[in-house]
Image (cartoon, rainbow, N blue to C red; front, side, top):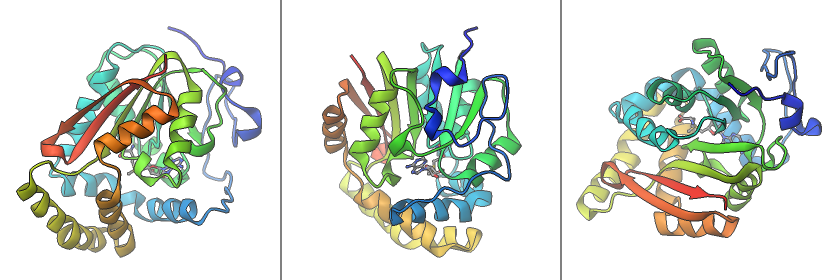
Length: 265
Ligand SMILES: C[S@@+](CC[C@H](N)C(=O)[O-])C[C@H]1O[C@@H](n2cnc3c(N)ncnc32)[C@H](O)[C@@H]1O
């Protein structure tokens, strides 16, 4: 197994906490408050902090459990990767978990999120020797250039205040030859299904979300962000603009979500 020295990976000035002698960032309960001047970031952070306890349950409920299948399909793209994988916008760690469980992955995972409660919640429920935890911003990654073999992101990029900047950061952190796999919501390609799905997003999802999490705004935001997010061709154009090559796209579940693959040549 390859061992990674933390100091060779991370940009010191952007590292919020370094605790362990053994190459690991540990998110402790008392650490940092990050000050963001950007209100979008603050809003997103606050929303995810407020729904943290209900996040996994509501994901499964609102998707009728299909979200597990989506993540399984996503990590399959990383079957051949055994180096250092960045789980960007890792949240409560479901994608890292899927990578460890459903593939023969033997490398290390850097699980990064700017919402500390989400990471802590995930860390309390599941730990694995493969994991490093980093509390940081995807738009300004605390990582040196070209250190990461692959990046995976599930339902994260939609929340970026600057999507192109986020993609460029991923590109910068990737090694030459590295790949990025992005799982994100898209719109159903059959018009009848799309109407039905949009009605669900408008009327049902925010109600169920708010009853359970007691945060009406968070699930309204979710529904809205899905409706206005880039569609596959636009998103692939943006990936290309950030520098990615050999970009591919695949719809799942009638187009409710999409998986994107791109490479750094
Ligand atoms: C919908 S959750 C996805 C969590 C997980 N990847 C999953 O598969 O369920 C989105 C996560 O992205 C994080 N996030 C959004 N913008 C971010 C940014 N700029 N930097 C770091 N994390 C971010 C949020 O804090 C949240 O935990």
